[in-house]
Every structure is written in C-alpha cells, then in structure tokens.
Length: 88
Image (tube, rainbow, N blue to C red):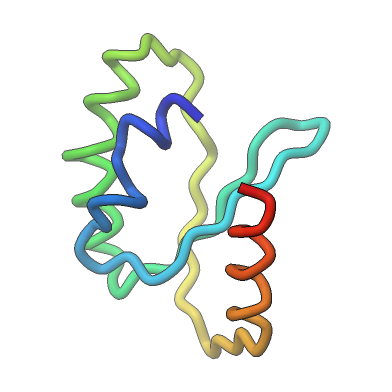
C-alpha cells in the first residue's frame, strides 16, 4: 500500500494506463494491469515505481509477466467501481 500511495497512480494516472486491479491471498499481493503498450508500462516502472522501491527499502522484487491481450470485456465495470466507492 505504501508503494501504491507513493507512486500516486490514482491521482496522477501514468501515460498508457488502462486498468489496475490488486488482490491479496496467502501468497501475498497480486496485481493485474492493462497498459496501452509495454513501453508505457516499462516507463512507469523505471521512473515512478523503482525510485519508490529504493526509497522504501523494498528488497524483494515481484515476478512480472507481460502478455499481449487478445480481447478485453468488462461488462460489470460500473458495478465494480460503484461497489468500491461504497466500501471506501
């Protein structure tokens, strides 16, 4: 959460960011993002995430997998964001 806050993702949306989902389970945190391009994602990591990782003293680096999206369909998007606002 400290890294997410420090990256200012929600208030200063990075170039190319389309969506961001985060979840926790017994293995830790899992994040799924959708970006317009791999270069936009890489730029965000290099310029906004890595400086904060160093500043916060985070030693463990995440496993990152990049996939090209074939199709995206999010029919419940408005329901998701509405529910999130209610719990905030």
